[in-house]
Image (cartoon, rainbow, N blue to C red):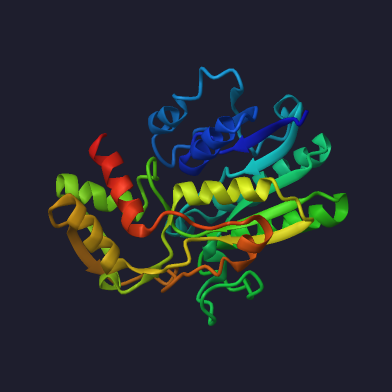
Length: 314
């Protein structure tokens, strides 16, 4: 019988959805999170509420930067999904040392624990931001990713390379997943969909870079989760995969769609895009489709409808 799955960042947006999907297919899941104050711990604890009573789910409040204490965390674990990180491009510009400590140093701790536990598959959440202002479009995994625009993608790229070093040195199977603009229920409050929703509900001002003349490959959370599970089930040495929808959307259109669902206008103000912002993102998902059948199921129209229904029910 296979062992359990460790999910770091289990109380977060994507982490809580991954835990639920693993439990739904009969896995035993160990979740860890340190409830970093980047946003409300109350919200993160609520993300876990529906799982806490399930017999196949256990949770530890634990920081991935810890030097000691890993042995009981990884006991019985044979696969790891490492989602814990400091997220956010703009915040990383102001706090680069913290981002290096968590996203690089913390990832090395998890990789070392994986080797010690003899895990058979390590899935690492990276970001489409590693591509920077890539000249070729859509983004393919074999494009250079050596010109990040902010500390956040720089730390994620560094962690990707460290994972490769652990693969070479220790034979660790690693799947690096570059997520593209994930949205949906439980989405982080600092991300555009939640900020827009707050504007639509309460009239708060929301900034829109370059008047919405930027493109993002918005990907619904259930499609991301399906990709995470597909990669988890497909150890192939060391591989990098894009997980996106493959259909970039103009930000102005994204705003207009959410406004139509709400039946009102958002309080939007256009501001210049900072140098840390990529003009457009778009995923070539051919490789993930070929290796583990990744195929997004949720269009932006459907995804935004589901997201707005969740927001309206809060």
